[in-house]
Amino acid sequence: MQVKKALEPRSTVFTGGHKLSVAPMLDWTDRHCRYFYRVMSKHTVLYTEMVTTGAIIFGKGDYLSYNDAEHPVVLQLGGSDPKAMVECAIRAEQLGYDEININVGCPSDRVQNGRFGACLMGEAALVAECVSSMQAQIKIPVTVKSRIGIDDHDSYEFLHQFIDTVSQAGCEHFIIHARKAWLSGLSPKQNRDVPPLDYDRVYQIKSDFSDLAISINGGIKTLEEAQAHLEHVDGVMIGREIYQSPYFLSNVDQTIWQSEAPILSRLEVLEHMAEYIDRYVAEGGRAWHVIRHMLGLCNGLPGARQFRRHLSDCSGKQGADSKSLFEAYSNVSIDV
Image (cartoon, rainbow, N blue to C red; front, top):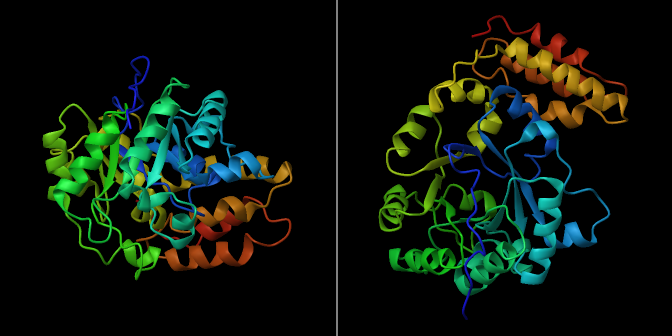
């Protein structure tokens, strides 16, 4: 199959922006979660949860809603039918998304049955066709998030061929989870931990494809580790560590982008979020939809367990609002 490159050059969000990003996490990185993260970091690139083409085209919910404050924000799309991918890409661009990312990394059975996710690493030509078809119709960039391999297809040559094929279709930015995926025998959770990390393989891809933007993902827990990776690749994506301890984001603008903006205290973050929560509740939403993403804000401080418990006990009740944030925070004895 022959693929065409994009019709015109695209300036991507990556330039100056993708040094650090928050990974797409199903059931976690919804619009409320992303708004919370944006309060703490103005530069970190935020990804939506994976949204399937079927949900966007046939679903009754509003799967593409987001807050204007979230920019730069990337839609992660799950699918493999070029026509459906193009339709969703056009909708996303019209709504103002900054980029679209194709999921070629999720190993769950449900995703495989839909013929997308990590199984697509074995169908590089199809991924290339999706990229080419989408970029022929939209101006925002289309990127790919993959693993380093699948099942017994885990050689460096396999990964190299995948990147080569898809990049020729016009994809200029790859986010690579530095573990292979087992498509059978391991659960999605096990696939995040059991296959060993191979950062050197991702570094080698960057060396071999120096003209591409390469981001690395998997097992990164500290800003110091992120900075070490940035000596070899263009960007770092972090997921679970940020979700579990979101105050991680409080000084990334200063550390990664050398921003001179002040670092918000946890109390200042709560004050910003209180306004958001009360607006959302006034519109008919439940406070818990937002607050559930904030349970880890005080992790590492004395009183963090009581903070989490109070929020869990109180924020899900009918009529709950932002008051529970400050009631919970009164259990925390130190703000650093």
